[in-house]
Image (cartoon, helix red, strand yellow):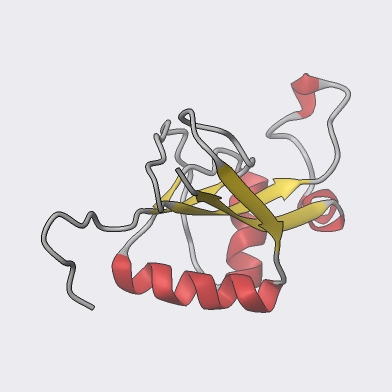
Length: 120
């Protein structure tokens, strides 16, 4: 679909947390692996930026979706209409020193997938 004059392209991101990157109103909803695959299919056509910074998370992502997103700790700034597939742990780690040292089985066991959209 062509953009109208003055319309900006929707950016798509893959994040490992539902982070508020800029002030505004956001909506976050849980989603299924099936719906995440549909989101990723569209994102692959249009392009996306992944900011997943943990190897075990990247490996689980590749196992579930067949996409190697690589490691990236880039900071992003969402704008109105931008969306992110959030691929995160649904528990808080008590010891921050274990980040990046978790097993892939642990990641799978405590995985939450959601869609974050910046509304305004």
